[in-house]
Image (cartoon, rainbow, N blue to C red; front, side, top):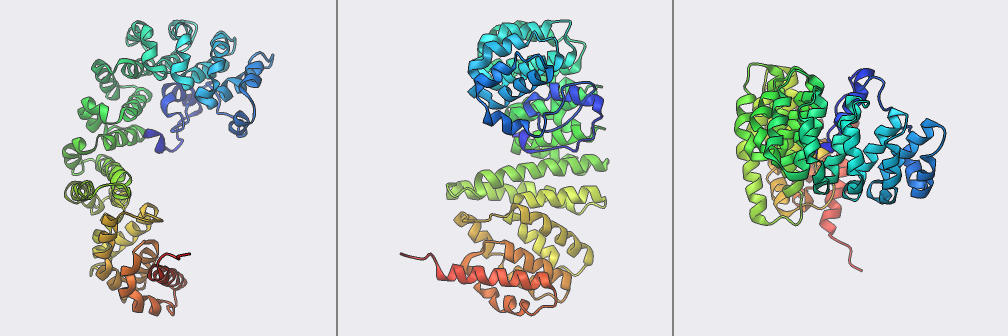
Length: 451
């Protein structure tokens, strides 16, 4: 899901309102826009859980507009649990304060299908000329969140595709797709992705990302967006391409050798998201069958990791970093490559490996792993021992750190001598890592404690 990835908050205050309305489906990704709905106060999320729906509904009538805003926000945070407040939130769509109306329509969307009875009022918000584009975009997204139950709103949404505002067009297209999976909506989003308005392009990229594998009809536009001048659009497009998986790989292999360094980095990032999906869904899944595991691992080795390696060897630092991050997201299957570089004769390769091994620590399993992953770890032993015994202190430090981070099981006994030697190394990181590794080896050798 796109909700897992984040972007730096570089948007101006004027952008906050626009982006929040356009990206309701990914509201945690970005902050944006002028005079728009303010971010929630730090304590409001906790407060939403502490008070009942009835208490928040009562607050919707508070004379203080900020209190009404808080109530609408809190009801939205409660999602479907606040379904009993649909009629009250519908009434709040007529509030004199824009922020209250914005959070009310947001809340109706978060309630989802059970808010279908409010669709006529939401359509009115979508079409009301007194509402600004951000409010109309929020109304369109709320209808999309309601889903097929908002089918009666399709005519109004299709009319909104002709809006002068790109954010309204994007929100309407996504809503149409969510309601009836229209391919025409994909075409609109693809056009907006390549359009002149950067906020609209970003919103379109995030919408396509939310569609996951169903966004394949916009593959060409997403690949082109890897070269977009706005870094946020590039990142969102890369994430959307990652959700497309194998279908995106031929285009990404071309993009990772493009003339523009930022395009190459974005292509590597997309490859990293593909690797991340395979690692989470299959490689670290104890329920994955042997055949499924083998297919996934072969796909990584043959298609995804080579793309990341190209980027990791790029002369541009930004591209190298993206390539190393892509390798790291693959988890243990990338370790043979990194360990080979770690014990190479040239310092450039070793430095590249050291950085990659730091990154990969975040993507290694911390507990029980599938048998297929155990076999991968077993094959690493010779290279790990070579790193543990390497004459270069920085190489040894990386070797000891990654050994301590791996769940290598009892097969690591072959490295015991090198690990014991590490207990006396002048480098404190090596000593600590050696101690951690030896403790794990002893625990693995002892096996589970029986009552």
